[in-house]
Image (cartoon, rainbow, N blue to C red; front, side, top):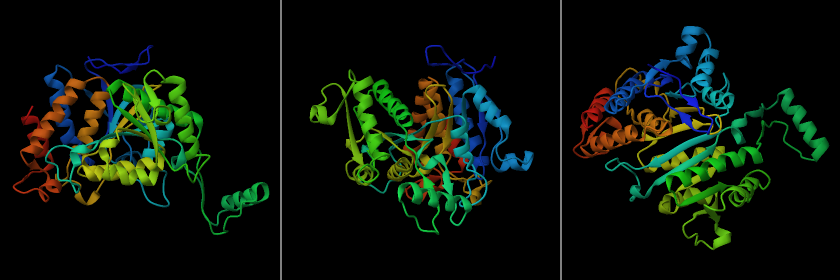
Length: 398
């Protein structure tokens, strides 16, 4: 019998053998990649005597077409009630238009962690010489920084009032034709993200944690993020972790915690990827880092992501690739991003054995050079298959 996932009194998820999990199919290629990924997820769970009771909820274009609402309240209520959900890519217009649906879901449910694991699968085409050295997990702050969405449009009355307030009270002069954004970075928001990253490193046996920031320029926001991170290490993780400055780089059997300026980090994850493990950073830095790293291991088409609140237990797992509407209904694109997001979801709810089976079968499929068009055009001797055929090839290798 299907049941809800619940948050236990000990702060861990209580997951039945047949959990009810809401899903959003997604816009554009969502109609192709979600059914393909679901086929693999269901087959893997069945091998271990488990089953997911999928419950479709609406958001994006499909929701608007059927209900006139881009993000119906019923969808928000479902994610709130059932704790864990998964979604495909959603429409996010540039410039005007409605608020980003992805951002809205993250803020409404206070999903303060954007978790982006990045690793290379043998055989996947890569533009770098040693993609096997890339094995990082990025914890990107999900509710503050630029994602707070505090902006005033250029020439608007709001922008004018802000310019006047800043001029009169702080002596800060801003050009009249400027759009204005506010970048809040709080101690609370920073440390709950950093706490999640440190605990992840402890639980998963990871050896290093980096705070990535631009504190050399933005001293009271990004610089504060760095400072608060080191304070947290001493206050809550002194038995498991130590800062570089306190050990000279020799952390013994503890996790080594250090920091890197964002632009330098973007160079070093390319030139020295084996020196990075777990990264905690603010929103915009994390956006750049996660996509740059994804390019090293095959692109965002094979990059999973999760948005989570480790206190309430809420989590929405999502494909990180765009909706690519020109490829919709062609059974063409690579479903690996949403599939690996499903793997991340199974890991999150404690179904590690199911997740491992999918990863092994995916690795075997790619090693056999049975791939979708995006990989086939970069691999010699590849067999190009459709999206649904790629999913079946994975299932055949369980």
